[in-house]
Image (tube, rainbow, N blue to C red; front, side):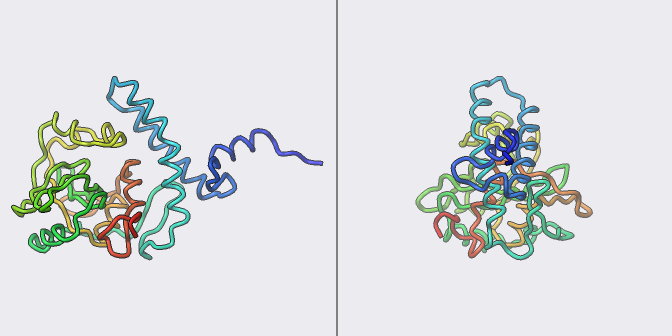
Length: 251
C-alpha cells in the first residue's frame, strides 16, 4: 500500500486552493512560480517605508498570480501570433522591426476614443524615453461625459477633445500619486518615468500584442523585451481580442 508524501500534497495544495487548476497542471504551476519570483524580486527592491502597503501587496499576490496563470493556460481566444512562455510567465510573439503605433493617424485615434471610451477599457500607451520606446498597457478609470478627457489609471489625463494624445510626464510627485489601485501605487518608479513622452494609442492587435510581450526598441532597431509588471499581466488578461473595444468581462 502506498501513500502520498506530505510534502507533495502541500506543494500541490499551494496552487490548488478554491478549486483552481492545481499542482497536477504543470503549466499552471510553472507560470505561478515564474510570476512569484518576478514579483517578489520587484517587492524586494521597492523603495518604500510603508509596511502596511507592502503587506497588502504581498497578501494579494496569490489571487492575482493565480488569476493570470489560469487565464494563460486556458485562454483559447488569443490571436494565433501570441503565445505563452510558461517558463518565464510571460507572452511572446515575433517582434516587429519598428515600433507599431508611431505612424497612427491622430484624428482617427481621437475619433476612436470618443466612440469607444468606457470604464475598464484596456488601452496602449507609447512610452518614449532616452532608453528607447516601448508600449505599456493601461486602463481607463475616469472620463468626462463628453469623452473629451479621459483618465488612465497610471498615466493620468489625456485631452481627447483637444486632440492632445501626446504629453510629457508630470513632475516626480505627481507621478507617484497618479495611480489609483494598490497594485500600481508602488510598481512604477518615478525615476523610470522622469523624462518620458507618453502617447495614447488606438488599440490594434499588433500594438496590443507588442505591449503584452514587452517589446522594446531603441532609435535604431529592436532590443530585448522587458518583463511586464504583475499589474500589466493582469491587464493583459482583460483584453477583448474579438474587437478591442470592450473589456473581456463585458463580452
